[in-house]
Length: 353
Image (cartoon, rainbow, N blue to C red):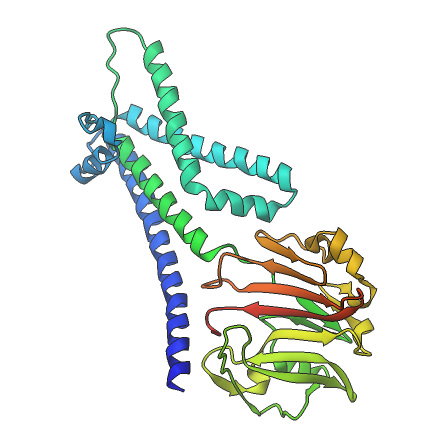
């Protein structure tokens, strides 16, 4: 029991850390917005920005330019320079997003790619901003002073810092995936979300269990949660399910979440079972060998991985980890002669580990 508590404490700590990191990213974003509006306010009032903003802007220098200092000046040109950088960053994001969408024909995948490359896109915008400014200086009439504003660099530095931390956050947490579902009889089970009570209300029962039976999440191997039970309706078996307490280590069966579902190919009810509205009984091993698994189940996830071998096929959704967002896997197992053996779906989350 002490080992179980220790393991769950560590994984819950991961969940809390990921949430705290997300809050830190949000805080940085709000600080960046604040820095920008301090510049806007100062320009409109004809004042200087606070000294700490100048210092922040001065810190935004590459190693080779440590001998060079920016100009501690606040005027309308500094605001224009800042606005141009923000506009260029938005345009770079849009252009890159359109390119990715054209390549993948998947909006969520394109969006996720853009989000996890925010720091790189910010650096591209900084470079673009520098190139444009260089040509503007060349075209500027002689005798007119050209400044490098530390006030505008303060905003740019804040944006780059926020985008860097946000990129780290995205690499750690990934992008939320739509939960796969299982349909059988009149029930629609969303793996990782549907409670056992919904199945009980639909006329199903769980073998050798009552609605008030205690379910304990032992989770000794981090591969399965809760307790594995047999799903039954009208005396007919509909496969196996893992029921897991949503919070804590134990709860009544009726309150538990369905985190795993499996059905063997020789189950007489297979013809009534669908994964993401795809009839399992109509699938063959050739479908899994020749088609993308996302196409078989009509899914367009932001982040996924397909694993294929001769008889075993896995589609993983949300592969960056499950600190905040759930990850899912759809599995199809076949015999050596190509006949189906079993199908399953599972959900994973740090709060259940």
